[in-house]
Length: 224
Image (tube, rainbow, N blue to C red; front, side, top):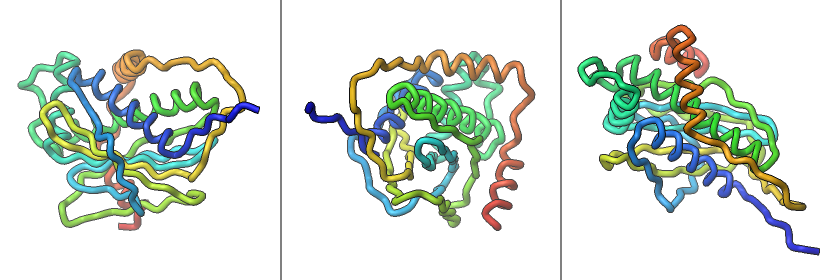
């Protein structure tokens, strides 16, 4: 019997890192890279200056967190908006602006959408995501999010923008292995198409919920 191919938690982490890199590179028109060294961590946390998180479940469950410094958040925001044709004079100037938070939430939604699509096509496993939530955090505040995961494993990866600003992605998910029993056809997901679909959908809908409202909902959920 031929030896089976096994995909571990870290293989799934690589898929998520690739989604972050592809979607942000396409959306901003700049080069985003990530470190080949991954940290094993004991818990996932929202950290200053802006933290975004999204839960997913289905074939396996997990939590994705992205923590941006003010510099990395503003660089990504400005590059994204200018890549869409927005004049520089009309851009927000502070990372605490609602526009910056809404943009990061939109990009995180695209990232996890790309990731769930890849999981479905490459692993033939279906997972669903909820709406990303975000919080602008004071440097003295650290919020830890608890999730009910089966033998949870957590990882932390550093990403670097074109201007060498750093942000971090953290993943907590069930400890699981996928074993390939036989060969099957994999369909690649086009990140350019996902970004265009998101932009088209945004133009046809009302403005997203303001960051302040999302922050208040999150604080209510956390009992703060």
